Amino acid sequence: MFVQRAMRQASKVQNVLGSSTSKYSAKVLSSRFYSSTTLAPLDASKLEINQSKNQKPLQENSQLLFGKAFTDNMLTIEWEAGKGWGTPQIKEYGKLHLDPSAVVFHYAFECFEGMKAYKDKDGKTRLFRPDMNMKRFNRSAQRIALPSFEDEELTKLISEFLKVDDRWIPKGRGYSLYLRPTMIGTQESLGVGASNKAMIFVIASPVGPYFPSGFNAVNLLATSDKVRAWPGGTGDAKVGGNYAPCIKPQLDANKEGFQQNLWLFGPDHQVTEVGTMNCFVFWKNEKGERELITPELDGSILPGVTRDSILSLTRSWGEFKVSERKFTMKDLVQADKEGRIIEMFGAGTACIVCPIKKIHYDGHDIHVPLDPTDKTSQAGKLTKRINDSIMDIQYGDVEGPKGWSVVV
Image 1: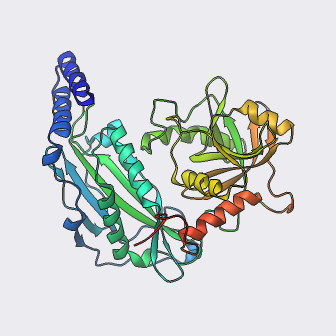
Image 2: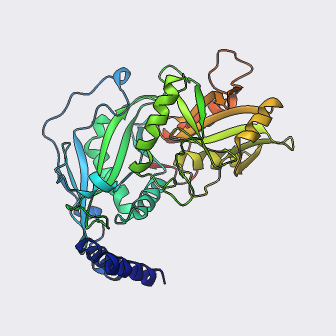
Image 3: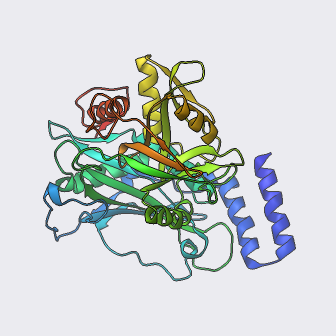
């Protein structure tokens, strides 16, 4: 039924517009749904390695800045409608050669992932829950009509890429190699329709701790006049188009002394995300229960890997209630008045957790507690415990749930 409906919609567009672009869109739908068995799948066994002969100098750990230095090599795979995935290549890191008319530049055909590789105490390289990154990467691609791929094959390719650029993975707890798998539409034409060409590329950057000198709790500006995402949009996909529109509100917040926006949605000001992070509140709810709460995945919230890991870990502890549901600024304001807020933090790949100490909303400040037993602390006890627990698994110090820490 879905295939037939998609074909009818493509046919209607063709009849209405009568353009070559709409004709092509219908052909792409046809080839993707009816000829998928003839398309070449993504196949890691076909990998060709032509690594760089020139090794860049490595930086000291203390000098590492997020996303500033990149490894010697990169991984690329091209896709074409009617043919499928081409030969994966590991080659010297360098500029992409794209036509100025490539659809990625004009219609935001772009999605990406953020993941890290870690060195454990035995010198082995580990990935943290790569299966979740690959599944989300595929969902993001499909949301913007880019081609799907075989999850396990891309993980294998990334593993081979890590072996080639192994010297770039910094050692030491808190240090890692940040990986950025990206997919773009590369069709060379102007016209809004499914792209007949695409490319996956993976680049990597050595990074240090998000908070080099320890946690640094942030101040938030609750923002309702601009929205990050909305139900039915692309908030649950990791697409580039979600990010650029958020920069101006963040710059405005920075001018007022706030590090990030607390994104609100709807007339009741539902709490959604913190900057580019998922949002968590640890409080005593109206029933007096200790509860860790985060907004539910309603289509506007990014299903973060760290988010899921926090939910899984804290539920396994069985020490307090863990919930995924909507809550509003009215709920937070009331909890603040009644002294029920215990901690609050953002969560994401880059930082694991980011403590929150203040929210400015509707002319008033909500002061979020940190660690009442240590006035110098920049993070609450639960925030620190979650951070340490996840890092223990990432670096192989603790076994963790099956499939979470994968040795390359």
